[in-house]
Image 1: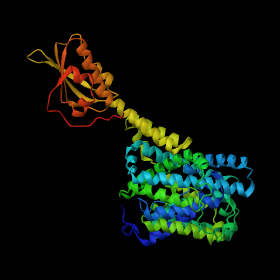
Image 2 (image 1 turned 120 degrees about the vertical axis):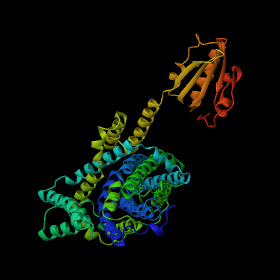
Image 3 (image 1 turned 60 degrees about the vertical axis):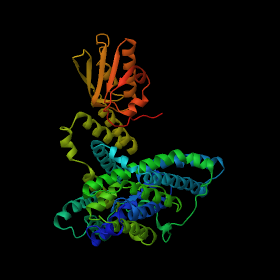
Image 4 (image 1 turned 45 degrees about the vertical axis):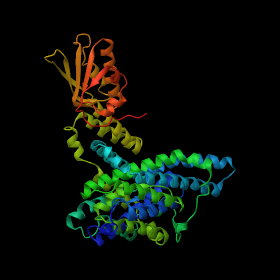
Length: 513
């Protein structure tokens, strides 16, 4: 488990604090936008960014990783909102009570999903993120970079020339300033300079305050509240399918973000600890009127590229966000949206794995197919579907490549025929295994030697079982060498019709009854 004290500060306390302030501002429009997607009040997403961000900053598996309300989770919550709305309307509930009721179902979803994520971490299942192949990881990163860039387009509706000038200016600042000095995050410089410019020159451009009125939330902090439907079994049945998806999507996106940051920092984080932290954060969100969320790759990369490598950066980001929302609403409202669009576009450019273009012509076609497929599905569909598809495709390609078992044969002095097998025997190679035999023309004595082969699953065992029966039906005897004890114990026909020779290997067979 990562030690909190040892990872509190990254490169320096100054870098963590300044980077955290940049992230705090960058979190605001995203949280508001994702709240609108989930069809709830902006404060529900802002509270999620504060609560989840703070808890994962303190106890997460990767110092400096930023969590909050995300689009991947918000899209799932749309189903909860629609289903809850239908139930509440059927009960005659409307107006503000309807909006409040929908939030109760969403917070219940957060609690249930969080408990699932804690269980995943507690049972150490976070390690299964290692099953995601590198082409799928690159595809995820590329697809998410495109999604991040495209998600900013909605802020350009009705934009004037000044907004585009600020976007370009912000991007140039973030590109050029680090070449001159890294003493202060370029994103923070862009926020200060261009906000002051808009105010001084009275430029007509869209501001954060134009996205949603946050003035009514000034002075308000999250308050503990047990979801009204917490013990309602019908409500539990309604949210359960969505909670499962939220838990899995949240874990997948968080652990993939952790993997990306591992590559940047060169230090490995704890996947299981991150699962527990995400779960604890989402459960807490559920009891403080916030929506569930997960790690945010865009804001995490902003933090890392700005020098925020310690837990302090995430803590400052969360506290800075709630300070802006609760006390400095007027200051937050005058920040131009164009600055945040420019920052996120630079994040998208930095997130995209440009080297994958050079590699794609050199990597195996199957890996290139996985990379392109995961990228496309991430853009047009869903992150979880994209990653799972990549894993399945890679697994099928692996099985196909290794679905080859060969046999060399020779005749012994006593006239018996020896089959020396090589390769894994499993469901994918059973057909190739069966094609090796010439039962009709084989001599009376036959030996199957598995010294250079391994039986991987129950399909392989049954294939051996079946071939021994065919030799028995042909009136021929058969011996088996170098087969594990577990293989022998599973067999039925072979135990009756053939003899085993000792000096057998020790390995388990993958099977499930």
